[in-house]
Length: 97
Image (cartoon, rainbow, N blue to C red; front, side, top):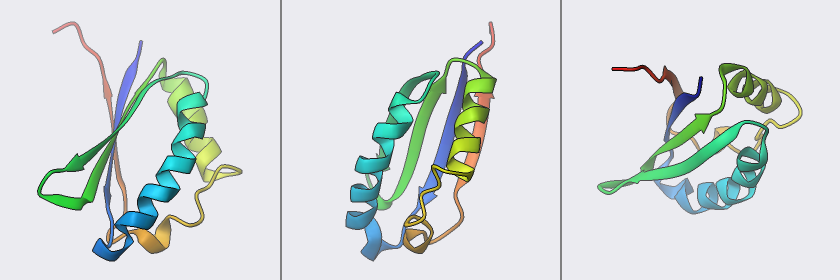
């Protein structure tokens, strides 16, 4: 069963251009990761420093493998200084409702 993940990011306003560069580079890896079906970046139309990364993964195991990659060898080390607040990740399962 597929899962949807929303990763909410709040950047420092002066860091938005650099964040675009970092994510342009890093989301190539995310989109190519096993099980990634959709990876879109949503930018708040009223606040360009507020983003939501919308992801759909084939399985929970695929999402967990990706998170392990990002916590280890795939860690985005240049991201933390750009953030105004800690990222918030929420995972949703699809239902038959």
